[in-house]
Amino acid sequence: MTFYVTCISSYAAVRQPASQPASQPRPLRSLLNALTLILRTIMLRYFVLLLAIGSVIHPSHGTEVMVKGEDDKLCLYAKLMVNFSVLYEAADNKSNSVQFELPTNVTLDGSKCEANSSTLKLNFGLGHSWSMNFTVKGNVYQADSITFSYNLNDSTVFPKSASNETVSVTVRPHITDVSMDTCYSCNSKETIEDESVNQTLWNVLIQAFVSNGTQSENMTTCIADLPTPAPTAPNTTTEAPVTNATTPAPLPTTTPTPTLPTPATGKYTLKPDTNSTACLLATFGLRVGIKQGEKYEEINLDPNVTTASGLCGGNSSELVLVSNTMTVTFVFANDTKKFRLQAMNVTVKLSSGEVFSDGNSSLSLWEASVGSSYMCNKEQNYTITSQLIAFTFNLQVQPFGVKKDVFSTAQECFLDSDLSFLVPMAVGVALSLLIVLVLISYLIGRRKSRTGYQSV
Image (cartoon, rainbow, N blue to C red; front, side):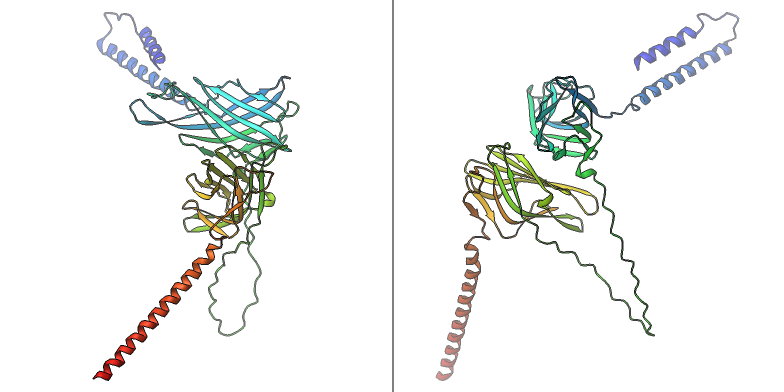
């Protein structure tokens, strides 16, 4: 802006006469000076307006990259938008938060394409990078992880940072079961949360394994972008009119809430690779309840159209179940002695077409000793959040220490154990004793009353 102002001022100065004739009237000279000032002001505002318009007429359309293999053919294509929100410690012992987006100017150092795995790595700024790893499983591929590395020594992004380290966080996106030779497409926003970093992805178009160097025109669309199902047509049957002279007032009708059948039991297995033994076993039927204001809806997970994926680790394991309407993520924690369900996240498309997503990462459920499994055949319900309820049926899980692809000895829940029958028995015995005591007290009281009358 300084450049334009200087040019305008210089232009106006050049256009002014170097000297006025002595015979020129003073009113005319004053008028010329006033017109020059007005012209200068108008031109200045015009250039400022152009600068302002120029700053908004070039919106970001996302980052588009093409990775080529050793044969110089396209092997990975990506176009996406990513927003970052990072919480970091400042030098004054305060926590600062910054928001920035993935720039369009990136480099691809570290990106690679292989037969069964690919890596997209986008490097930007002063030591920042964002990468996504893909693997092939049969006729589909998936994104296994996203790693975001940010350099706290970059004062332009992280002012007054107390650290100069480069921090890396790894999360798992919900990009699974993408058919080979298709592009994964998701225009809806997906926010992946971590302790100090939130990443929001949208307008995503990715093909991780490109055949013959040509990008496919076929799409695998994410659940959030699926069209809303058409509403059921109302019943148009008209009843015959009543011919009675007096017609009674119609009774109010209520539509009963449909009762869902018990969800089918699914069996899910995770293996590090196709030739390995299982590292995680899970068997259960699942139903989720969604509460939004006064509306409540329950949805069963159909194991017949559900695929399982995830990760097995020493201290943490993850099971991701994806159906045509629902994605459920379970995270198990291991403290070397016991394991438990630590986190559960659900993304589901409701009957209204709205996409609901909620979860809790501070759970302590399904606890059992490491090397054993947790089992509960009875129906259980858990309040995951104020809006999300989970119902399980015929549950048995073992996220750690699986041997020979079978469940280890099960630790039963209280409802399945023999002790569960002792509670009603104990209550019954206590009530019986209480009744006996009341009767004895009553009889003793009556006997004393009769003895008193005889003495009088």
